[in-house]
Image (tube, rainbow, N blue to C red; front, side, top):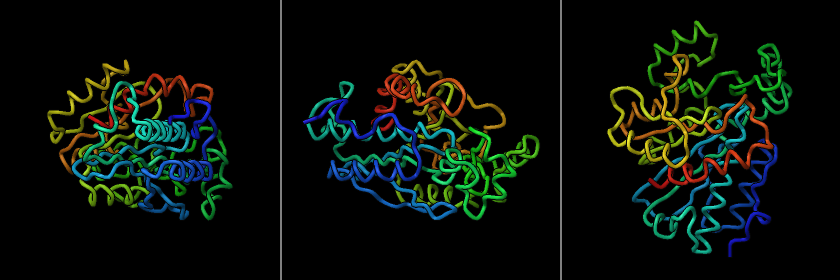
Length: 299
């Protein structure tokens, strides 16, 4: 039976690679319906782990979180959703009015709670967490709280996908953003792209902070159903459908997935404020986004 809030494994707490790994292990131990798959490794060799819920392979959907170091609160959101889905499925109870027993028939939901494990470590602990790249990370500002967004080499992995690459490079020269020497130059980016080339995801969801916005389109390959899906997500959450600022309009995971596969992809910007969002706001952020997050993997 569902054990309720007090029995949750995923509680508000600072996230790093060790905590995330411990929570994923604990969730898989509690819920046999959940299985871990290592989909790649970071620059510093940390595992990038997917949690797979569901046995059917008619439809697969991916939710990935923590592309940027200071946005680790998105890891908690992904893990909390995963836990709630598992617990309600086991108890055969509806979640947000949805019967997961029926909704997951023929469907798999893949969660990657920590897409950029090195970046989260550096954002939490500073340049000393960058290993062989510590000196360079220190020069690039890794010891300034909340400033580190890239991986261990300082590359913004959400600007390292092959979507509008030339435009991205031109914008990066103006802004100083490090988007890498070439598309998929970073192992974190390659891990996600290779997974999407192996598994025919119906659609993908990327969790970021902040702004309470939904990004849903990119270029001429945006499928018609993306607008309707985004409208549903907006209606249940109050989040606004939006387009990213010019400096963030190319090279992202959502952009690449749409451009490469002509299937829906969404970036959900959770919460409002300044990154990293305060841990004390986690429950409010999650509760406001809860139905949207659930529908984002079930639509």
